[in-house]
Amino acid sequence: SSDVCSSDLQEGVPHMTIEECYTAMGANYQDVLRRFYKPDMIRRFARMFLQDTSFQQLTDAMARQDVKDAFLAAHTLKGVCLNLGFSNLMPSAVALTEILRAGSFDGAAEQYALVEKEYHKTIEALNALD
Image 1 (cartoon, rainbow, N blue to C red):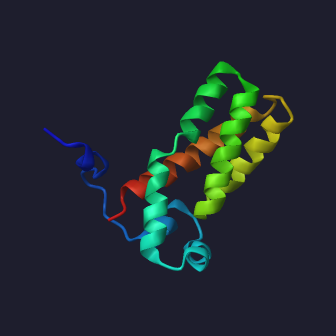
Image 2: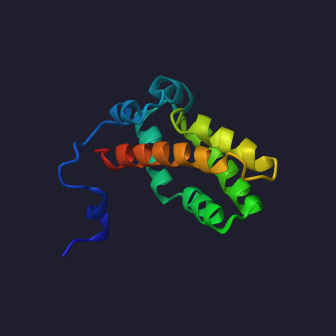
C-alpha cells in the first residue's frame, strides 16, 4: 500500500534541486531568486502550486463554455505564475486571460492547449523536486 506522501515521488523521475526544477520547466530561476532570496522559500511556495486548483477550474469552465468562470480561473493562474516566477507558463496564461476578458471563446481553445502543455511541464518538474 502506498501512502499519500509517496504519490508525488514517481518511479524513475530524477530528484531535482529547485534551480534544476525551474530550468526543467523553462522558467527563470535567477529572477525568482531575486524576489524570494532563499532557495528553500522558493521550493516551499513552488510546491504549493501542486495544490492550486485554478488550472482545474479553468479546464472545467472551458468544458462548460463558461467564459466568466474561465476568465476568473485564467486570471488567477496568471497571477500565481507571476508570483512564483513561472515564466514558462505565464505568457500563455496571460494571452488566454486577455482572450477571455473580451467575453469570447474565439481563439481560446488553441491558447488553452498552450497553457495545458506548459502547465503539465511545470507540474512534472515540481513533482521531481527533491
